[in-house]
Amino acid sequence: MTHRLLPRSLTLRLALLAAVWSALGLGAAGWFASSIAVRQMQAAFDLRLSSTLDDLAGAVSYEVPAGDRRAHPPAGAPSQGAAAAPGMAGSEGAGSEGAGSEGAGSEGAAPERAAPERAAPERAAPLARPTLRVQLARRRSGTLRAMAGAEFQQPLSGNYWQVTGPPDADGQAVTERSRSLWDADMPRLPAADRPLTAADGARIGEARGPRGEQLRLIERVVELPDAPDRLLLQVAMSRGAMDAEIRRLRWLLALGFGVLGLGLVAAVAAQVVLGLRPLRRVRDRLAALRAGRRERLADAGAPPPTELAPLVAEIDALVEGNRATVERARAHLGNLAHALKTPLAVLRVALEAAPPDLPEARAQAAALDSLLQHHLARARAAALSGAAAADAAPLAVAGEIAAALRRLYADRIDLTVAGDAETRVAVERQDLAEMLGNLMENACKWARGRVAVRVSAAAGGAVVLVEDDGPGLAPGRHAEALARGVRLDEAAPGTGLGLAIVADLAGLYGGRFALGRAPLGGLSARLELPGRRG
Image (cartoon, rainbow, N blue to C red):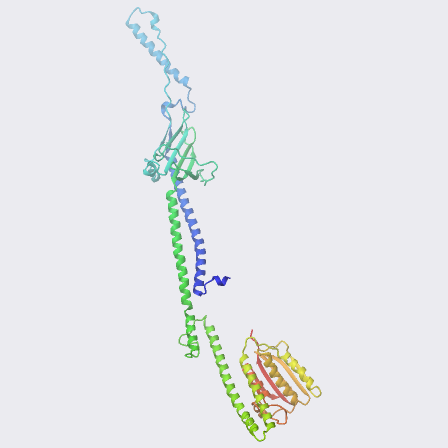
């Protein structure tokens, strides 16, 4: 089912595969790059918040008015009653002096008038509230000057700060905030929230602003020398600008990686098109070869790429093999026509004679049959020569033939077969049986009493030796014995085609056949056959 889903075009397949892998790889790379960039932006944003909070802490002062020492007495100060006694004594003294002066001016005054009247006690003044002062513009810090600027002055701008002090005598918390908060209070981080915690104890987290906007808030509790309790410092900035920048960054990354992916797919498609161009040239050369305009694919002027050179060489070898097969077939047809010409003429004369010469006709018919069998064997061998499936074991085939010949010549021939059973040759079993059968039958026919067959492995193949103790042949007549239709002894039965068939079949399979003198004294037939590849 998978091959049905894929396009038939190799270019489309490779482009589709490149698109899938590019999408996966670039998607993962884009997600990783986006995550790193977002973390860096958030870290920079938090660093800006922390720096702003540090500068705010340096600009805060807690002041208690001088007349409000009773509300916030310093350590070791006298109580309120002790502080009022000196005032009261002074008043009485002043009254006495006044009385004395008046008495001195009018004589005879009653003594009771010399005693001053006790002044009524004064009502206590209201307590003054302590104040938080945040001096921003006077500082040299650029951050503080920015906090004193429009960002923190414009109402509900999204940038806020607030300092919350301890409650005063009336129980109201002393608060100083930026104008941007207007009359709202800074939100607090939830207790259950576990945000990033700075080394100085600052807590950073998310909160909702006065308008419901998403804020990034940092808060820290500090202690000042003049403050009786700790102060809470808070700085918050809107995430809107940062979130918009993050969205813009992600969009740019998606666009960039998308364009890169399309470029990679286009590059792969271009590589495939350019890479397959030599195959199109090979196809054109094959078409020219089939049309007869070329004899070979290889071209010395335009050699194929290194990767295609073995393919071109194999195709040329196949073409040469087919051409050789066709040439052999033509030669076989010519030989067959030439060989049949004379027997057919003699047969026609014998049958047209009055009366017909039937013995001669039968002899010529037998000759025709032998010739046909010979050429059919050669045609079969030519068709199967070099086949990849050709495989046979010479020792096993020789053993089967020897078993049949022993029954025919059991009374006078000692036939032995020996050799390597693992040796195999690249020859069809039927053709190997025909070659060995002709050689072994010929040896049994001429032997006096002994025939030996030996199979041995050789470089690139196998060697089969068939030897007998017969009369043998003179060295000068070996080539004559291999000629087609030649019978060296007309008294012996046969057609004179056995050795010729062996030589032809051996040549068609790339082997060799030769005759020689055997150590037994008779004829030695040496058959060399190619081994099986792989």
